[in-house]
Amino acid sequence: METNYQYHIFSPYRVCPLGAHVDHQHGLVTGFAINKGVDLWFNVRKDSMVRLHSETFEGEVEIDLAKRTEMREKHWGDYVRGAKYAMKKRFDLAYGMEGVVKGSLPVGGLSSSAAVLVAYVMAMAKANGITLTPFEVVQIASEAEREYIGLNNGILDQACIALGRKEGLLFLDCDSNEYRVIGRHSHMPDFEIGIFFSGLTRNLVNSDYNLRVYECKTAAWNMLAYHEQPLKSFEKTFLRDIPKETFDKTRDMMPTRFARRAEHFYSEYRRVRQGVTAWETGNLPLFGKLVFDSCESSIRNYECGSPELISLYNIMRPLQGIYGGRFSGAGFKGAVIALVDPAYKDGIEHKLTEAYLEEYPEYSESFKVFWVKPDDGARFV
Ligand code: GLA
Image (tube, rainbow, N blue to C red):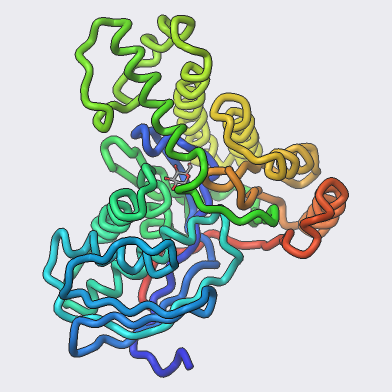
């Protein structure tokens, strides 16, 4: 059936080994696009209607791009409406599309939401003869998620999905928006990425995700206030704008919960810098250790991990053949990822499955292991 369509976009899922929960504070992040994701097949219509159905979720979506953006309905169609909202802020959209969308892995932790948004933005641009740079796609898809869907996130997901490259690691500064892909060093050992789905699915808008963002901003506000610095509006306040020395001087003065969120930010900044050097020099064991440390900080300082994800992390940390691993994405539910020496894949899968299901037998049907590789960003196939 998919072959009946003129266009096909593949929009990959993403994995973020280092730089977790810092994009919204304008920190430094790293990531990969992977060789699993969302496929969108479509034909351009002669009118402004969009008609899509999903092979993953129930129901159809029918919207008119010429009309005002509709309210959210808590349905997968919200992502189509979100893309329309963000595109219409910039462009007139005269032509719609009809097609089908399909995800290749269970939803949770790999940013399927950003992957579909990127695909819809690219498709609406194609239908209307609009040329977008990959970074414009990142910005539009990210506005759709922040302003329409209501998640106060940064641009990590969309950046990995649109800018990731098969041959290397994406390194992005979420303050200056400068990015580069760092190729693999010739001495770097081979690796694959393991994705271990806890069995929990999630919806970030209903998690503590937004709360954590406000806690980070509150820590930043506290630091500015202690130093008699002018305050900016909450929306324009970011930890990145406050030097680490200020944090060192003020951390004991603020409630410990806020200090812990800031501690995660500053320590993650250091880990990303060290990680980039490790990657550049082909030192995968050091890179992997920093990924483990990042997860440790997510648990202790950022306090984001469900018991299931923390258990998966604890089981995998001592396993032979894992360079490093952490919660994927926000880490409230979803998946844990790991960079793995391919020679150890089977043993890791076996031990992890056995130990996890012994603790959580209720997930015996839904717990899943997948092996993936870095891939190029979203594209027409
Ligand atoms: C989610 C958000 C991203 C980022 C990660 C955590 O995936 O959408 O913006 O904050 O969590 O690193």
